[in-house]
Image (cartoon, rainbow, N blue to C red; front, top):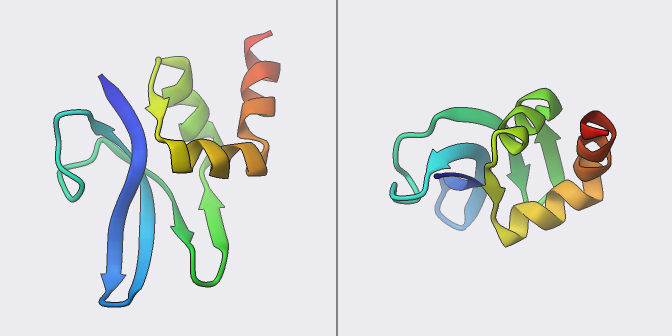
Length: 85
């Protein structure tokens, strides 16, 4: 099963996160299937590759709780509903 989750990058005390599609059995810094953006919680910046995210959501990938909130704020689920219907 594939999950959409955050992969930690950056230096000590200045974490930024990549948004990746990754196998459930992999660890946090494991090999990812696809990079789909980044999230910087310190500066509140987010970059999302919407077509790639929609592709994995259509295939049944499940976002984690944090990513669910980020996607909801960005309107990804609105695009997903529009594309499905």
